[in-house]
Length: 225
Image (cartoon, rainbow, N blue to C red; front, side, top):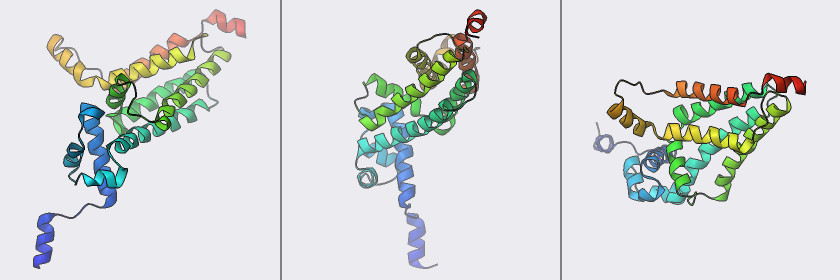
């Protein structure tokens, strides 16, 4: 083995640009969820990612741009899925149930820190976000509004306020997934025998709660018919 090869092996292989970018995204996501935007210094992100802090400027243009990249990418994925569902011609209750399932999947398996980040950001008044990111929740609201209004027109849903329906849905999902660790502590202290509800059970609960709660009474459906 040559001296150069041995030295390279001891030092480890330098990460690729894509690997460095992914490491910064992963480190930033976890730290922003844990401490909030203002509680995370640049050096902590770099240290957790295992790179020089200059790499944050190189790949993203600074801490805020890294934060916006994390939040914006997740929102874009959610918006794309929800808008596709809202434009479906399937029955509105069926579409609403699937939307809840899709959002639950995205914020648990693919982006498990997103709800915690967003809960912190909402409490901060959204001051760390820029207009292009703030417009994403508005698109989700518009998609839910289309689902609800179509359900009302078709007689499947009662005449409900789409905004209140959206707030009930999103607020409940974000709070549930953002407070998992707190809930675990409460249950362990006060109700040690009570089983912590898992994500699938909660998604099913919300599907039933919303679709049954929004359902039009049979007399209303007959009048519309």
